[in-house]
Length: 344
Image (cartoon, rainbow, N blue to C red; front, side, top):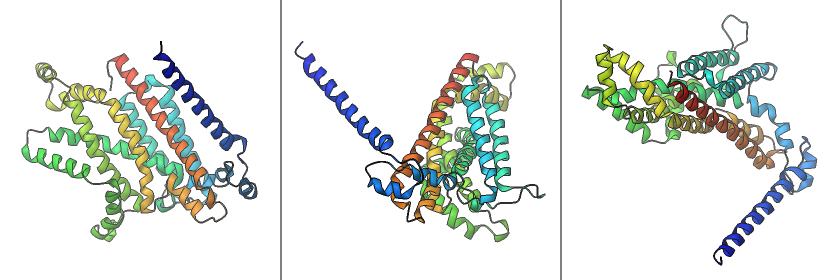
């Protein structure tokens, strides 16, 4: 009985300290906070309370970056489309097969790209990708990169297990080199070295070069995730497919890959979450996604510049909500595949 007293006392002290900290946070973030975009009221706080008015003042640059003001309804519509697709992903688990997600994702990327860029017939005026930014750019980069890098990662994983030595060595070399360099270096190479290599008539905009770099970098990690899933498929699966008369391609497509992808689904979701957060690094090459848009909007405004802390708290909350949504969608997909036997 004596040993329980210190444990209970420690638990009581822990909860008291936690309650005290929570009271301080609520007092700073809610009770004494200023929510209206009033810079004078925020200055009068003298940092005793949060100035959430900076979010209200800078919400357009945060959401849309440098997108032309008169056309900001287009990234807003693109953002609503992506949020609607995310809501469907969360609340319609019976529709979540890998094939449907892939086709829906491809259509979603094309629709968002058309809204942001415009078209050649003049129905929507063209807006250069250099002016894209904010939350739509973050979501577009993350989703399009995952959509493009997953099939490439699968191909690399299969190539690393190939019976042809040259293919196996080429895939292994690409994977190991890509995983051995930091993402920031890859982004700098895409931003500043590729224009010197690519002929001028084939020059790509910065956005597409960065997206290609993210795709190649992500595919190397996905290749190892998928290779781990392929190793969980026993040799008897190949023997059964051979007895049924399936070709090598049919065996991989209909038998092996569905089981492998289902086995590594938690790792795939974890990689998608990491990729979403890694998109914030593109700000170092002057692409103003969500984090970059915050630095751009506050860096040139001396009145609101002192409230970076509140701005980064807001950005962190947005990323937390998106990552929690991805995690929940992954759990629903896992439950759905277990329930129906892994339909792809």
